[in-house]
Amino acid sequence: MSYENRQAVRYNVDTAAEVYTPSGVFPARTRNLSATGVCFDLSYELPEDTVVGISLFLTTDGIEDPDAEPLNIKAKVIWTSPRESDGFSAGMRFENVAGEEQSALDTFLAQLS
Image (cartoon, rainbow, N blue to C red; front, side):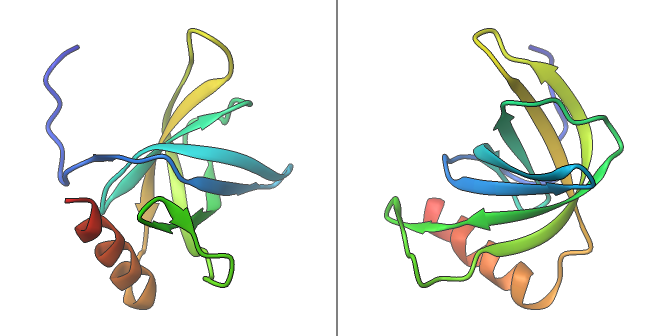
């Protein structure tokens, strides 16, 4: 794998998510997460440059709080590729994250470091 110049540290984390596209709402799992984006494992392919809504169901100590609101962010699909076993992986860059969403994301990432 070649050297990649990243703006933010990526954390390997597996959380539940939903991806909102013009075609519908689809389940996803995070592969890794940073302050600027996310990599998802998906059962479907998303076209590059598509802007989607995502809901991240953040956890505490690996446990999802059923009363906690998900983190809702818009993201742009930067790349997608088939996985060896089945499905696809997709890298997405967050768009216009600010305020409460940024604070919740920063707090969650701080727990991972």
